[in-house]
Image (cartoon, rainbow over all chains, first blue to last red):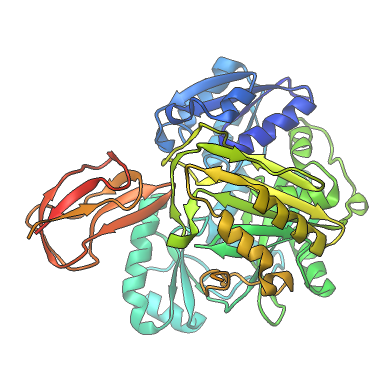
Length: 448
Length: 71
């Protein structure tokens, strides 16, 4: 096992990884920007190294600065968390070149899955169903119009190099196509440095269901069942759960089989997630693979009783997969709510500021992953996630009841948060019945 | 009549798509803020011409700060 691990991230995920390291007797090294001097993740680590000014590209996204911190600290391995450099194959390669272990898949696997249209082709070739769309990026008015007609309206334009919902645009009719395409290319260029855009059929009210997989890099892949992450705003997840409510057994089996087949095809190593949309007829389509630990990994841990970060560390250190497929059981139900510094009354506008008061819930079946503390400033420079509240129960109803109580007991003052919104989700009849789809928030389902 | 345009959130100035003298319509982005990975336009409340821009790219503004003057 490693003696020291540097976490190239901040907030709750850095703290989550530090906790796993401590449990395994590993020395922990934090990195931080000037905006994060007082952040809890800095205090949690055995050592902390300043990596630059507040803007992420000059600190948490600077491969050179992070590698300098790795060299200075003598860390044997780097855990990238999620976001920032976690899906940057150049960073994974730079770690390998510097002689430190990148805790995640190979640079080749990150690269293969990072180009979303190439990933889709690869998965289609492995027999995994994909959403109807163009085989690759499209360009030029004639090609765009022709391909859009073939795929059919409504459709969605996506940045080939994108992720996290950035750069996506829905187009309802041919009349809107040209201007929407120009805007999508421009946004893709601004966000990812490449203006390549591809076209996909837009599915009406689908569910987002994903499968947690884990590979050893030698072709052995197991799955840790599914998560439903249908409650989203701006294509970003807000509530996640496992098992997916009211998902037919046949659909679940098809999803897990497709996820394992796809991961095996690229000899995937470490933790990864295959994301699918499930349409109202129950057909499933691969949308993308996240080649890292997911924000919502705790719900999987709660229903399987397994620790994904321990496994990440062990497999990265050269140990075999810690589980056989038949040992991985899904028991009870778990649900996670993401508490963001956003104002749900103003269409989820960001609300940076200083947390003046913080009361975290506790109790039977409650797990809290918080990146903030009282007196800490939530900077404008990074993702607005403050904390995740997770509840498990013997069944979904018990998990919902516990999470509702946890949300009521949670107090955050100084910044506006999504807590009031999340409380409404827990009491919503549609959500409680398991009738979920990705367009619920934009349709106003929880405006109560 | 001059009118102050204020930032409705705290953020960093991401873009200044207008300059003094520009004519804008109601709803046009006068400046664009970036906050917590989101781009948020600060819009002209009515049609008019930009008299003054009070911020520059990269600058941090607080909720309520005057970012431009419209006339």
